[in-house]
Length: 374
Image (cartoon, rainbow, N blue to C red):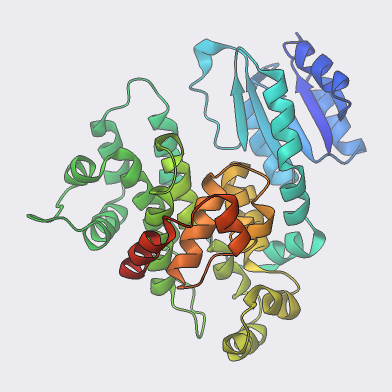
């Protein structure tokens, strides 16, 4: 992985530069915007790490420009001024705040390397580039996610943001009542939904409503069924992790199959061929790769990369059919999404996965829950 470290003309990231040198990372250090632009023009980078402020430009705005010009690059924002941690960060895959943990930054870079390489192959990048109409990133959700990070967030602010879009408000309430049905009166307002479900769950419903506002006409593919499976996966997966991971796990569950919407719109004849033969094989990923030269896991992972989601969520999208690649880490977001997705498809999880994470005793109850939700 080749890194561009973009600092201000009055350097703030010299300590990070030293840490990168000691870790033997391949990087170029640029001081000032002109130096950064020159470096990008002369060399190819996989990652850009940008200071919070570079001359008169915010790091977030610089990363937004980088995303448009170099969409395959990983974008990391360094917030060195604790008084400005509310800076918008939707353009960054990761943001790190002062005091900086240099080892954590370097470890994060090392861990995302394999997944980044897997989703930025030419065939995948070109697949996304050749789609005339793509699903739009969930903008309201991303706005809500930033508001949630503020210390003075309250339910009224959340409701006000959602209610700016009446169509989205109606869709959110429809999803909420259909999917999180409760005894008594239905949810009639965003405030009701917040009270009954909580802000974090509601934000995930907002994302679902935004994503599935995109209604492609793909013969043989039910967007409604895909939506319900995504919601069920999100709910079941979130129940398997610690409270600190629940929100990101719900997001990953909602997004894990987003690549199907893209892949199946690539070529009508190829899609028809895929649906014709998919019932004759247990390995649908192999069939996707044979027909489309890629699969929905990697296409979805790259789409989420272009939207700026963290690689913890991207990894869950890439690996939700690859349990053997999940064993290297402790049970978390990606493992929960794989298990939930597998059980909801009424399939048996890989034996090594069950053994590795000591799930034998809990598997029967999880299977029963998944059967009820499917």
